[in-house]
Image (cartoon, rainbow, N blue to C red; front, side, top):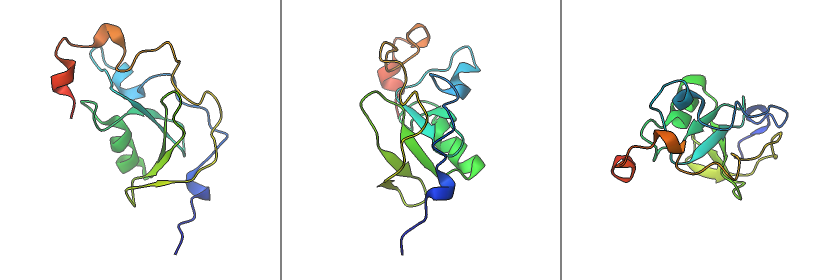
Length: 118
């Protein structure tokens, strides 16, 4: 039985910003890659990042679908099924700025950031 994703994807909602919303609320937060909630647009960091804010947002909100927020990536992921799914392109921008490094933000990266990835 196919899962209806229409109520979970709102293509009109813009992203919450150009970086992980929760990491940016702290003075030391940083991320490896970014994910965008397909329901409400919240940008969060991936599970390899120290905080894994995208997954935390999905669990807390019940918003199960994310889209990559990395340049050149257009995949959607469903946390409920642990699978890639098809989705409608969201409102722009479709990714973090190309000139924004990953990991980022650059001025917050600890020297040992590679050892801190999960």
